[in-house]
Length: 349
Image (cartoon, rainbow, N blue to C red; front, side):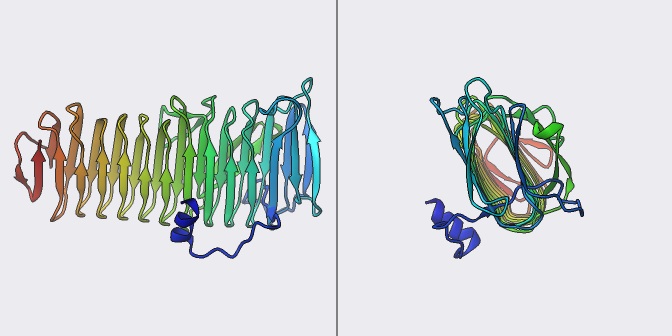
């Protein structure tokens, strides 16, 4: 299924994973100075740094008696120019943080579920494939290019986004951003928008009760899919986006003129879309759906009474389907019966 979706978005891929290719580990995408490739382990931090443009491969798995990384990890990589396998950490000196500082290039990153560690991955510009298992906190920052990411849950909500105030997550993906590591690899932050006009596939495999966050800056056609945890998505750009969340309490904000499809589950959901594309929103849970724009907008709010739906400026052919007990507004006017209001067909069931 994932292979089919990847081909649908990206076309036929020429990359073969029969022989591992290099994974980009990078510092600040805006730096002009060359930083030599290196692998270090200091004070519990496994810090992998690549040079600016190579295609890098990084695979990290658990070592020792435990599968969560608390008794060590094994690193397979070609980031220093030759293929090497090394083991770091132990039960008495565990790996607490993994910092993969990957710059430009087409990279492959595969980190197993290491729930005893925090995992930060920084990518520059390139077509990257990143697979992160569950950890304490997972954060992926990447620039422009076609990105395919599957990111597991994080038990510690240490990642935030100024565009989603008050929300923090244990698993976070930022696309179309520059980045910088800090504090010897124990911190990472965005350094500004670089934009991303390519198509990106982002899957957040967050279990129930954990929080995921996805922020995309760019006008590509993106697919974001969540699991049973709580998912917050912020998209700034004019691409056509598919956002499919699970059964958690989800928050989706899209600002842009593309044609967007949002499908939220049975949790307490908040969906806000601003732009003049043709938007389709469906949600089975409680919460609110707000769409502002002149496109053909379709809202299916299910049968839950504790729902608020608002359309403003909607174009011809727009429609709302919701419970007759829901709060429904068209251009600021509350609608209490089925009918057509300002050109919007309203069906209350």
